[in-house]
Length: 172
Length: 416
Image (tube, rainbow over all chains, first blue to last red; front, side, top):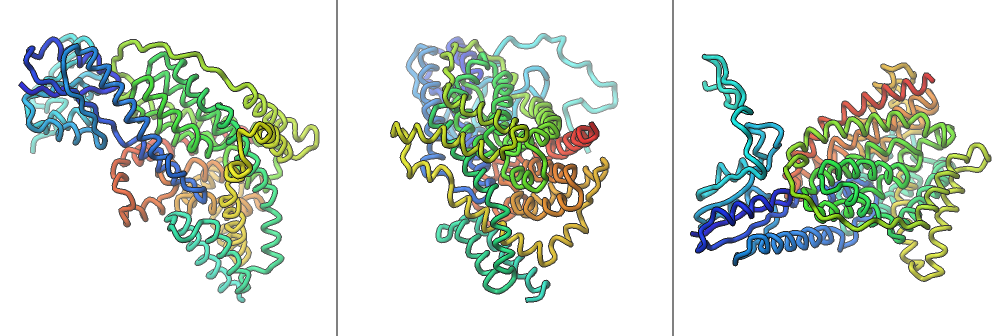
């Protein structure tokens, strides 16, 4: 079994613990981290907005990139230590959701954590990136709660008969 | 040359200069374009030598002030102030992304107010990025906060934004009076940002996390902080002691650069570069070009559009029009066009309302103006731009609300 474990900064420990428990001993594990390039782009764009200022000296954009790459490397190394078994490490950069789906090519199972708003159960508990990955992953997906799963009573009451379910668009 | 022809020539030169500043072609710098444009306008008679000289004399102290503040910011960087701020943010966050965002808000607002928006964007943002990486949380809300607060928090002091410095000299307000009138608008603008950010980035800020290791205690660079505190105190007392604030800025710049030169921790070349001579020349050239346009009829046109009263509807209209102007032509030329008209006709209220518009308005886009943004989209200047739809949504949520909140509080402050 080839397993891909996608970790993000905030919830990596929970995802690794789940992988440790769930994956059989002979699973071929790859730990994946994808660094979003969006913050770097924002920083660069804000600099561009300063009219008439000297463009940033050549190392500046790379400086953010190297901080990001170094942080990803350290995170993956810590994740492997926590996993406690052999795994290959994969660091990617770019648009997170697309990189994850691309990395899942040829994989049997993808393990990931919800990345949405924990205080709003329902569709909002998935951020746009996880939503996209779940919709497009070319393999089985194990979706975990990064902390305790919510109790059943947090589910909103059913809508009155004849109305659409709250999370679904109306059917035409 | 007739006024009509002069105006047309000045507007064409202004457009060309802005095009160079926005597109940054490799073969001509912003400064060369602005100076070339100004010289061309003098040569064709669109502005007389004496008119150009007056514009330069009027801008001189402002540009000197700007240079001093750039040197102080660079000195603070050299002394390690920004790295210390990173340690303060990391420690204060206690591993919580939401607490980190609160610290980023406070520190970005403080750095912007005291050292200008340039310091926040150029010097603080990389530190914030590294801090988010260090405590292992999404850098997105934190970096967006730097980009937004660099504009929203730049209302507070004359030194917080070049637009303010330009207006400060025209408004005849004292430094403390300027700050007193702008403190509530700044708080309002930052508060609006905070409320919107907390909701907009709720997913990034509320993820359940394991406890993080406690980072090392920050060590503030005492010397840089002292220079900054004494400089700001000098600004506050400037009207009381009858010394122009620019001299306190010059003293602060000297205090932080001379010891570095003596200790050889900075070279004269590095210091000259830190003062951004190209930028200073660009501002002077742009000032002459806008003056040529204003003197040949642009000011009459601006006067016809811009209300000059200080009733609340007038102030709101001024802020809105200024924000639109800033987005049409970038905020620096917008300020040069609008401030003289607002100062001549209306005084402090309209001048400060213009600043609210030109300072907060650029948050609508991530490159300072819609014109720049559209141009980049047309040319597909950077394919990563497509990632930034979120920035536009965030701008649409914060800018109108911040403009209204800040202007209402300015109106209240003017009443007191």
